[in-house]
View (cartoon, rainbow, N blue to C red):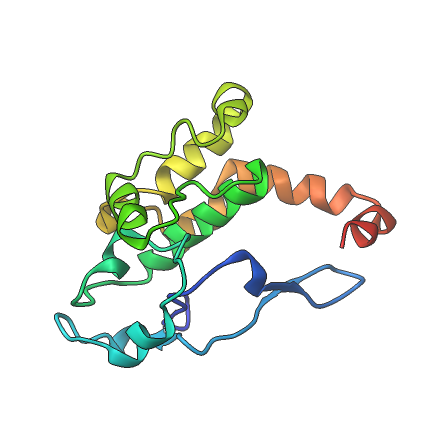
Length: 171
């Protein structure tokens, strides 16, 4: 984000680990990425629409619009959905029909998708997701906020402490 890129199509299968020593992550497939200054408010993007016929489980409400009025905040929503999916095993919004999925996303209520998470998820993680999966993009936290987040920092420290053998065997 600090370089002005909006990915627009974040999903778990596009996150790859690239180094066995540091386990740093890379995002692959930037085919739908666009520079923030190239977004043209209220314009149709036929190429984007053509390539996104699959069920967009990690899309924010603004990407469902016929006219694309969005910002880097779309990636924050998607990352929040990915974190939810990683922690629970299910996406925060799931419907088999695209229109039903769009309606669920526009409501933005993912409570009940994982009752175990609702009951046992940490307060810090729930606060993080509540700041990321927000229907109004102007109220979503930013990438800079994520870097400073307590849950992210604590998870990073725990991750660093894991045995590399354990992490490697998980992948």
